[in-house]
Length: 71
Image (cartoon, rainbow, N blue to C red; front, side):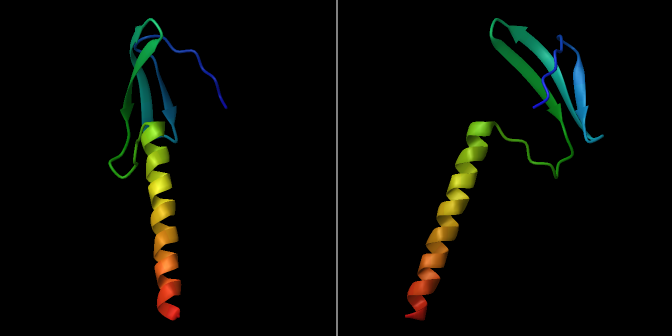
């Protein structure tokens, strides 16, 4: 993991087309702005984890139903 220090108004760039800017710092809370192409999905981690879990459950369910049809 790369750890960087940034101040309000400073930014970092990822892969030439994603820019993350520190918009505001209040106590322990940091507000970030993210500029990325529309085709690049951007999620909060807790939402991303939920999506991955749902996808795994759906795939397992579909596989189970397909097996049941074979017998």
